[in-house]
Amino acid sequence: MKVLMIGHKNLFTKTVGPGGGTFVAELTSRLNKYVDLDYFSYSNVLFGAIKSPLLNYGSNYKSIDIIHDLMGASLIIKKPPRPYIITLHDNFGILSDFLVYPDGKGTFKSKLWLYLTKKGKSKNLEYADFIIAVSSNIKQNLIDFFEIPKEKIFVINHGVNPVFKPRHGRSDKFIIGTLSDLTTRKDPIMLIDAFKIFVESLNKKEREKIELDIYGKQSNYIIQKLKQRCIGYNIKFKGQISQSQKPYIYNKFNIFAFPSIEEGFGMPILEAQASGVPVIINGNGIIAQEVQKYAIKAYTTEDMAEQFYSIFLHGYNRNSLNAAVKYARSFTWEKTAKRTLEVYKKVLE
Image: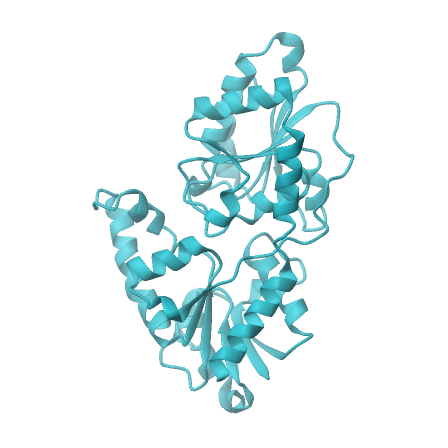
């Protein structure tokens, strides 16, 4: 069996980042054991849309048994002549606004983006023989928003690399940390304001032990805006880190905070839990049900600050932490690869 994997060129670099890069690196390294993989990459989505990946592949497509669009971002301009599978990782950007405002009270921008997203994605989804959704939430959105038959959708969760595990590496400080891009969707303001409220509840000696570390892709413009909210508080913007650094970064944290408004899956939540770190998420966020199970939900900024204080003062229940570690480590990339292989076999039947 030969499978053509298509996606943005950044997905196939060795220096993979969070999310899509991790998924492709972990999945393809395991699928290589079972199938013959070939690759087609493009430099940006628009270029990939105009120059259909399949057409660019030329006459060699005849040697391909299956085409697998790894991120669902390539806009196919005609139905591929081979079985076509899409993996979808997110809720289509500002679709989160639609889900938060199902009565249509979202912003004009969100309504326009929803319309364009639906028009742009509909053909891809129509052409796909099968769709792999990385969470049950995305499957339900495909059924509700795009009216995709449920029989066409397979839920295959991401995995957690076994390198994420509890280590003895925490400092004398009490560190609250996060790892995500600084975008509106990730809601860093909720985290910063919750941290400030938490610090204000401490005495001078306690404050000296407290630190908020923010890791991830950050533009200078956004950092400067956010730093204005951080004056007088021990909040550090650490920038991007490599995949090899991540397991050790998680183990520096006493709490992992993830206030994201919307996630297709939420891989950092499971990575942090597998590392033995209690995780606090935005209780109002749209996050995969599979990932929420052992996360602590904070529904307001004040609620998040209270959760910080409680763990700082009393620690976190050891049994709950062990259960979270065990659960997070049950998500393996081997399972992801084998279930993907089952979809390949089914599409060829």
